[in-house]
Image (cartoon, rainbow, N blue to C red; front, side, top):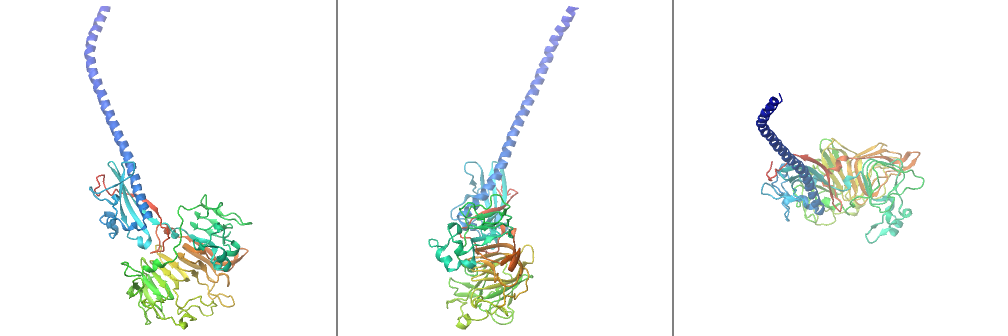
Length: 576
């Protein structure tokens, strides 16, 4: 039995050896398959990992392209003029006026043979195309940047805008009332002779000699705020970031007896990254009405001028002194009268007629109102007789009937403009002297935009009689606009006279050299004269500005929006 058993086992051993060979071959095949599969998986994982890394790096390279273009703009503000006019994105936007820069920029490359700029310290590269079609009108530049790493490319489109006054609901150079600035003691003892300007509070300006204007418990600043001065704050709410250039800490003064203000943004007030300063004049805006400097000049009016906007996209313009509405040459020695600016003259429908001229809104452009020139070679020159200079009315109905106004309030030959109405379109109004808001200024639609720039004050008209009663009914006043006073202030005329007039509702932005009062004599929370204020930021000004709005002296740029789009090029550089 045992032998039989052993024999069968022996036979089994012999048979098992044959079966083992088959098994070994099968197992080897399986192992080989597993190894091959594992290798394939590993290679695939490596490729996937490399793809994922390159995919992410390509997006980072596109962002680097945006930052490179923004940096070029900051270093050279005129860099917006440069780009490749044959780039697809540029052509589609209508920005073909751009030209290649005198110093070649590899990021403007196109096609398979075109150049790329490289991200330092890596194999990532980028190129970009520009859209500057609306920069001169609303301050917006769009750039499409494409990043490339390995076989991967990704593109983003970014909106780039200038930093400046328009980015804030409330911007001031000095936290002092314009009422006190010209007083003898203030200027005599608080003037910085080195920089030829008033001292800031943080430089030791005397508050007794120059006065103090402060934010009160009733104030609500519903938007970003900036000041170059050291603010005094007695309560109030600040619903957005607050910037101040003061080096002192704390960065605001809290008078005795005042409650602490409420700041919605932590660490406010804080210092800005870049200081913003006003230019000395708005004269560069007047240059925009010269037909020898550009293809689309605005309209120039001379002497006191009234502009009443109408909701149909037109404006009624009265300007008795105007002779030419566009000029050429540094001394305005030549002139034109395009129909879109109105026809000078006294006939019905002309600028000097009682009803003025009905002209279309200067879309995407500006109107500038200058004083009557004194140079005889200027095409808008008119002899200014003593009688004309000492006139009792400016020819537009100011002062109003029964109005008590100091002599010189309404100059007879100065560049004052009187504005009101319903705006349909995109436009800026600027004046060489004062800009007067003589009625509500509102928008016809949600996409309309208006800029108001006065070299001196931007005044809310509030006439009073000699007995301190209001000439106008006591009603609210609404202003939808970006407001800028270059050398003066935004304030209410006769803010401390007459009976309460209601609420001054501004939806937009306010920038001014000095703070201006709008009301006075609060008693138990009730205003006695002028207006209560209600100011709200127009958030559209984060990405756009009114046409040809005045720029700050030091121009910086920021990326306001960025979004990924389909890749503009493949890894070889060919357009997709």
